[in-house]
Image (cartoon, rainbow, N blue to C red; front, side, top):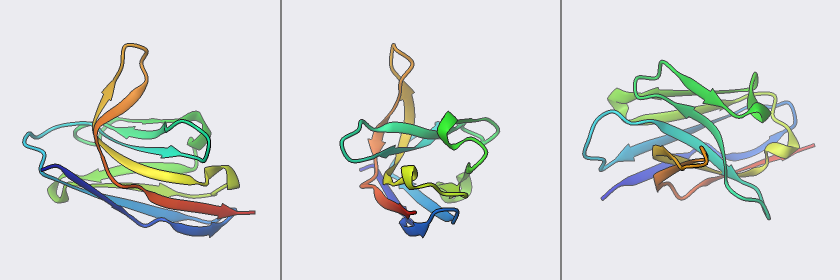
Length: 123
């Protein structure tokens, strides 16, 4: 059974920082892209950051470039998202997803999801 468990969300002030973590278990093969996604109330889930199998390549949404950093520790099956210079518009439920897939339109998704961790940024 595949499980993704996120942690690290909470309340932050604008300009502050939070670090999200995700631990993955139950995936039967090595080597897959992982990613962070978020969903704000009334909006569709969107990708935030994607990282390659070995961590050597990342893709960041334009809205978080220069502020967020994605990283992974394959020895721990763990994924991280360091969020700096937080803005109120970053408020959302953040999900860890693996393996990351892309649909015909190029839209990112994932085969498995965590339960989400809430990030709330106050102005």
